[in-house]
Amino acid sequence: MTTLPPTTRSRLQKIPLASIVWEGDRRSLGSMASHLDGVKNTDDQCIIWVDGSEGAVRAMDVVAEDMGMEAVVRTLLRAIESPHHPTQPCRPQKIVVRDREIQFFLRGVLQDLGINVEYAPQLPLIDRLFEGFAVMEEDQPSPLPAVYEEAIDRVASKIWSQAPWELLADSDILQVELKDCEIERVYICVMGMMSAEYGVLIYRSLDSLKQFRQAALGDNHSAAELEKAFLAQDCWFLNYEEIEDLENVVDESSMEAFFGSLHPFEGMRHFLDEAETSIVYATLESLQRFCDRHRAILAQEPIEAVTKSYRIALPATTEQKRTITTKVSTLPELSAELLDMGHSDFPGFSPEANMPIQEDLIPDGALVSLASIPRELIKQLQHQSKTYCQSAKVTTKTAELPTIFIQTTRSKANRLITRIQDAGGLKAVCFNPGHDPFNGEVYDLGMLQTEDDELYIFAEYSHDVVQQAKALEKWHQRCKKTKGYCGLVIAMGATGANRGNPQAKDMLALFEVKSINGEDLGMGVLKLMPDFDF
Image (cartoon, rainbow, N blue to C red; front, side, top):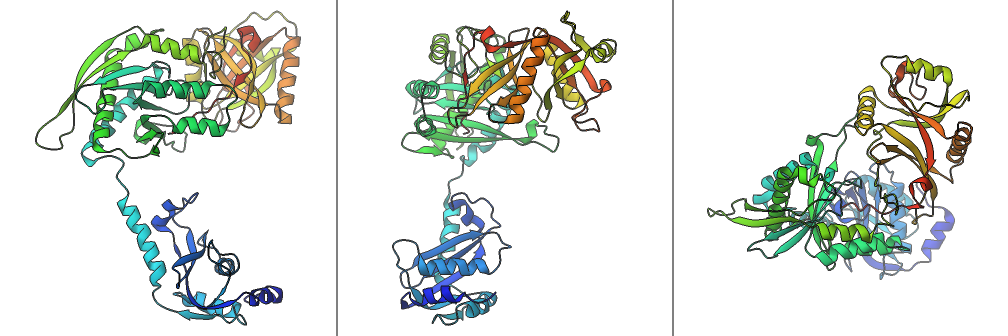
């Protein structure tokens, strides 16, 4: 269809015809994509109509490259009838395009509207607009000074391999004193033990650290309030992004490190100048050395007071080398204060139980289901040499035992079994209510408690999803019949023919325990808290 409906043509004819010339074009976004909100695909195309008399963009759309000519017409009609403010509706006397196909198509569509469609090999206004975007892209500051790029990436890689988040919770703050620097003291907060994001925050102010923690852990906060608190932080950050391969495996080579700054007046900034980078580099190098040499002390709970000094050589910007003297200290009293601040509200802590809740036990891609297994199969597994069995000496006479099935690959299943064994075995299965204050969702968290009193989430069961709610209700009914006894089966075969239906030969471990409620551990309703991505 190459003509407008009669009613549309009649409506457009009522709009004043002005003695002006418009330029119109359709071209690939390229670098312009980074300057448009929500646009990431540089293969998309921009349709734009510019008023040559005023130099104003009347209408612009971003479309997929395979979108037809109709998209050009839609943007043009919007430029005529409802242009960007403050321009007024009007019909141009002439429009100029640089594509012959667009010219011929528009001639057919715009007939009887008094608009001449002409061709020109160049469009000065639109060309200058896109050239301006290209210059803006070139003028963007580099994330890091060139002299520091190799050195700071190297220390970031060391920290990733060292994994300080396995030792330090976000409440285990380290103080770093810096001699002869623009800032005398910073505070390190390591992310990763209680969240899915790994990184290091370097606070320039202790008050900022406390204020954000208080805001994040407080009651009755909205998403907007949390974002406000997030942007009010005064810190530099190192954040890691993991890139998974086709088998969902992450290794060191797939890690990327990103640096930036947060400040109440600047918001989030993804580049550092040389003075900032020197402080961040010296601080991260000190952190890496401190964790490497004091790993045994940092693994203790609580961490004792310890201080260590270092001389950090900076990458040479001139022939004269420069060093920064640093002193790293643990802060046991501050750590205790921060723990007390969020003891009752922070996710993963219950007032009486004081047990952190973790999410790193169940392998990615594992299938988790609530079911039951017959007594005959339990006996078979107990006599199956390759299956590890932890017996609870179940005395009930029911024909079936309610069982949680976790099915994954053989290697991941074996690693999961080893982790549970290293923790002393499985102590209990626990279900506890949770609440997401941002969308109002209510759910039950399924958790595994190991003998060292660690809690690990294995699944969430939403009250709003009928299938999940019924599965959990059926689980509790089964557990009543067995006086709370239940089982956990870890099986292989998640990528084979028995995916979702593991057979006895696939079952590598059976743990018999009791299913309990969070109240038995002193828990209340667990509140979901935000995990900001830097």
